[in-house]
Every structure is written in structure tokens, then in C-alpha cells.
Image 1: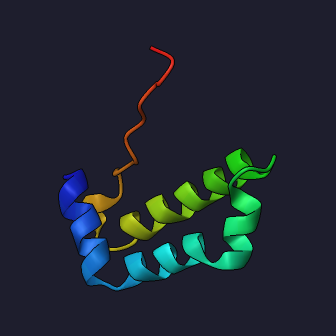
Image 2: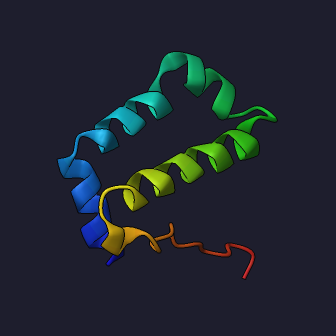
Length: 71
């Protein structure tokens, strides 16, 4: 379901908009290598998930998978 939802997001062009936000030079300077890294990405992933969920009711429970790198 996750892959289907992300592909639907790509088809809607919202994925490209989110990608452009992430790689924009102003954001890139703030979001990597600074103390803003974790909070900025937390908000970004929230927006990503909400964008996926808003595409179709069947995606309303989709979340970004989490990998615990400490394990």
C-alpha cells in the first residue's frame, strides 16, 4: 500500500513540489548540518504523510516506515 500511495503522490506532481522544497538552497543550508535538522525533517515528513493521506481515503492510514538505526 505504501508504494502505491507514493506512486500516486508522484503522479499528482505533489511529490515534485515536496522534493523541490527539500532541495531548495535556502532550506538545504538550514536543514543539513545544523541543529534544525531533526525538527525541520519532522515537519517535512508530516507534510509528506498528509499529502499522501489526502490523495484518496484508502491512503488515510499510510505512514512513512521507520527504521531504528540504533538496532
